[in-house]
Image (cartoon, rainbow, N blue to C red; front, top):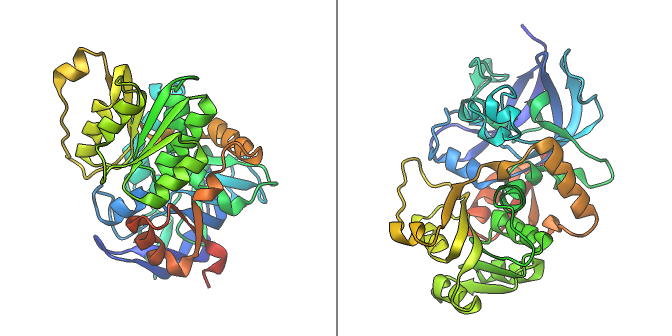
Length: 374
């Protein structure tokens, strides 16, 4: 039996159930793995939809996939980091398929199996409760706990002069929004952009659109506090979709044309339809909102074809984490990407409160501090 370490972790035992804080044991890292002592982990919409089984990740499981911490121990083949290094944990990927090799690891052919399979690719897990295995390796980390096992592939070494407790959300949500704009759609200087949904992902996209030089940036949401913050972070216009037709508002702002780029982050099919309808000729709509599996959406075929519009799905901002996360940290340190304005901290003991506040829209990006677990 491998050497084990005691830890605390938030476990989801059943569909729709709460996160329950449990005493668990974590196996020693395998040859290509890294044991990380967690400092803080962001909470993402995907954690909640897996809790509720929109995606069929096996339960019981330790979730959490926006982890930041300090390397405690490394496997025998690991050369990328050493104990004491600060790291952010991103999604995992095989590194060998054609898509990984061509610089698109977020579209790895084994993405679902490796990130949502409930364990390592061979089916084994590293986490136990009273000797019984718990599903883990969620996004290659399962970081809702005081310790996490990640792989050398999905950890990103980061600079030590930036607060580590802030950096976890760069592993998924923040990178998704910013990467959709900068990597996937490649929003251009002087262009127009609208974010349908101004939560953490949408606001990250708005900040990135400002960085890219877009000159018309429109925030769409139903929460006044989010729209107010969007204007502070770079939006030139904001519209409450409950009070006003967002498509008509966008056409009015753009002189009847529509925008060059839209990003849909709500996961609601009707909002996706609006994001497509709001496009100008040759416009592109990026889709990052995650509804339940099997959800259908509709669009007017001729309104798509004749104006040459595009709709594209985007995963993890089409980023290479080892490259993109350090870039975002540098931008943050220069005051150009103030994603800290989205963050509210909670102790691990209040993880369910964090989830509720996020779902109500009261908190944009909950971050769970592990130092307050005991």
